[in-house]
Structures are given as structure tokens and as C-alpha cells.
Amino acid sequence: MYYSKIIPDPKLTHCKESEHTFRAYFQNHDEALGHAAVLLGGRRGARLINAVREALDRQGPFTRRLRCQLLELRNLLFLEYAYNDDWSDGPDLALLEPDDPIVSEICLLADGLEQALYDTGVVEMEDTQAA
Figure 1 (spheres, rainbow, N blue to C red):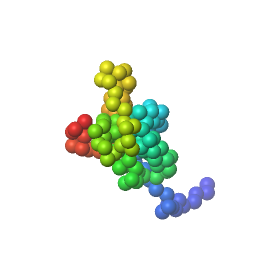
Figure 2: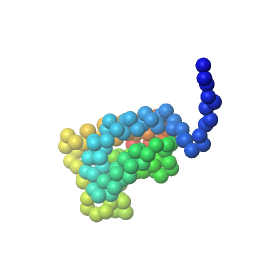
Figure 3: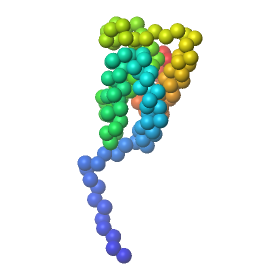
Figure 4: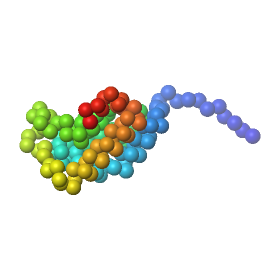
């Protein structure tokens, strides 16, 4: 039988298994995350979710920039920018009524994203104490 030696290619990058899991999570919840980002962040939320989508489409390990964008998305879903005039483009940030049914859906989505970020190692539990 004929065997050839496998020569590793230094150009190839290896992703952690947890990053593949996060990509699958994001793909399963992409539409809902996109709607929530636009609802809560307006145009800036749309730019953020599009940047995250583009970064996740690229192969390779998570970059520092992607990690920062994912944390920004997490903060947006947890309404950390609700009263921050520096973050918003204007009066785009939607302040929802607490009894609106979409609020519970956004809360579940935010909790799921936070757990996925924790499982991936993007955030530590100490980082999420305010949530």
C-alpha cells in the first residue's frame, strides 16, 4: 500500500471546537439576532450584526475584533446602551414596553447568546455579573 507523509500547512488555522459550536448557534439564531439588533440599535445595530455575520463567515479562529463585536452585541441585547447617547446614532433605540411579548423573546435570546459566549470562552462569568 502507498502512504504519503502529511506535511502541515502553516497557512491553515485551527479553530477551537467551541468556536465551531458558536458558529452553529449563531447560524440557528441569525435571523432573530438580526431583528433584535435592528430593533434595539437601529442603523448601528444593523451595522454591528452585519459585521458579526461577515466575520463569522470567514474561516479561522475568532479575532480580537470579532470578540469585541460579539460583546457589543451582547451588551446591546442586555440594553446596556439604552440610555447611552454616545452609542446611538440618534433616537433609533427602541424603548419597549415591559409587557410587550417581544421583550421575553429578546431576554431569552440574550441569555442564549451569553451562554454561547461563555461556552466559547469569549466572556467569563465575572464579566457578565451585571446581566
